[in-house]
Figure 1 (cartoon, rainbow, N blue to C red):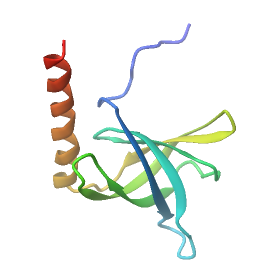
Figure 2: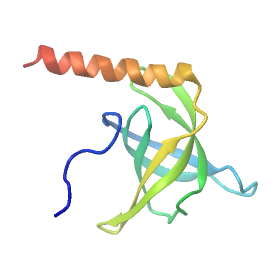
Figure 3: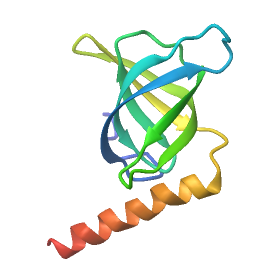
Figure 4: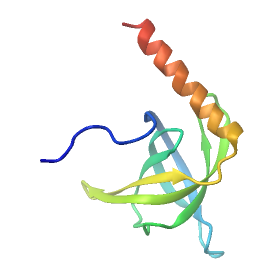
Length: 118
């Protein structure tokens, strides 16, 4: 029987956003439109009509809840299909601590809001 426990190290938070990602090891790569579904301190979940290769690394500018834009390098580590869409999970690589902290602060804020609304 499969273990249904959450195995992720950090909590995922919803973030609905469309961004363009560019593959870093392909100089001719054009921006690929993706729909960001969620984000955590470790990475993002996103959907894309185009099929992406697992293990590939992309660069994206992601506008987070505060309006700040973080430049992220994303290693695609999970690939799946659902309802005709390609679904992906990516981990951040080489993210500056300041950007990581922005996500962490928002995570803490969300947790406090949830506690206050109980």
